[in-house]
Image 1: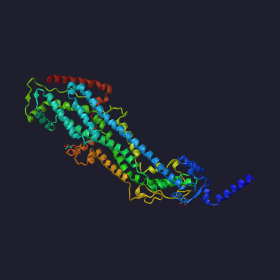
Image 2: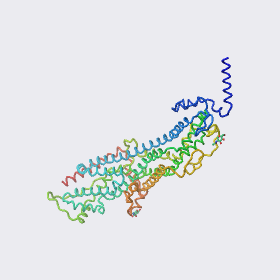
Image 3: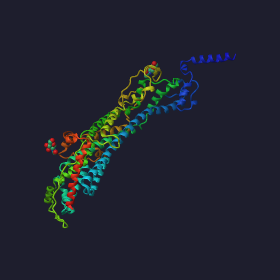
Image 4: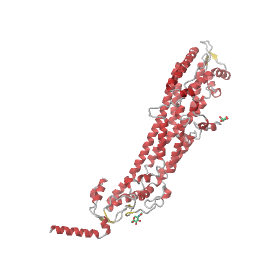
Length: 552
Ligand SMILES: *[C@@H]1O[C@H](CO)[C@@H](O)[C@H](O)[C@H]1NC(C)=O
Ligand SMILES: *[C@@H]1O[C@H](CO)[C@@H](O)[C@H](O)[C@H]1NC(C)=O
């Protein structure tokens, strides 16, 4: 008897359910409850059976496993569902380039530290006391270079800094080679004024100025570019989804819940249209983003080509000692010219002796670019460059391909058995192009093309500016800091003289350091190379000791 009653209830329930087609879809809401509570929501929100809902805002009215309250909560959920994959991708990109920026920055700084140490070691050996008494001058030189690298030409004008260095070096050397005379400050000022025309250090200062400014401009602008990437990505990822976008995402992701079809995934093209609508502003970054990355890829050539930072900084000790040797070789003529121009100095009273200029018997270790330093950054320039190139290329089209990157895997269903926004069916609409202009008539997301996102517009402008700076750095000009402080003055590049054209072409017209290497040195292994080097040092040291004892 009981069984019959139970059966009767059961049958009448079936009859009731089959009475309306929409009821059939919402048989029971158990699966919905499970899925809903797995999102962290209260399962009591979910009705046992489909209820007739007329006040749903997004999903279809009628018998439904959704209530208005659930719809609101699921809207919040869609907002974070939408955000999660984009945040993930953006944060990967940020991490990648924050790390690359650190690697390069550390590498450049270590090159400077190594160059300073190497100069110190070489000069202690070669010039002994004479160097140590004047070591502060070289310390200052490297301090200025570091400052120039770190803060750019607005803080340190490299031309100015270098001419101060050479003037100071000339003054000290001039006193040394003319130790039998007394010089007043006014006299030394006169000497400084003649530095340019005297060219006491030969062609070294001019070459070094060009090479240093090119190398520093390229290195610094490149690292600025690397640092800009995480900044732009971070700012763009603060842009929140529009209400219309969240609504479309809600419909796409959770309206299948209302019909009890929790496993039903959106059609791929449906997903693409929703995401392209949601990311219409972001996609507009792509053009400038790609231009910027191309300019970075172009500038990176300057970090591996001739006169790159490493091959300019590494042999700086050799170049400065070359300059010192030039001065010593010509000290007689230089002194004569100075005496003519600034007057005959007074002889020092205490001692009387004749000073014969002592030239160096040999040259310093020639530069060998094969012996590239591997720093504590654990790598050398070639490897850093190869790695960053890969990452830069990979980052291209990041913004316009975000929808494709998001609408993959188990987030969507390929084929016809998918949620098309109203039914489990084919998605018929065409997939619209990327960017605001293409998204005017998005069927799911309202895109207001008259109100482009301000944050993104700003980042587009920032990328545009940086691209201009990168391109200028590629041709050897430093405009980054001018642009920042708004002063139109010429800067470190020194492209204001008639030598501008030649300077700009320096990258192409001057032989690479490699071709200037003495073939004998190149052939020998690094171990063998040490022998003549230390011999030269010993000889040079002996000559200097002679010079110093002479001048005492
Ligand atoms: C979704 O499927 C239904 C039923 O086949 C169809 O009427 C509707 O046009 C489809 N919607 C889209 C956007 O393709
Ligand atoms: C530029 O280079 C050419 C040879 O390439 C030379 O004749 C000319 O004097 C140089 N100009 C300057 C200003 O250095």
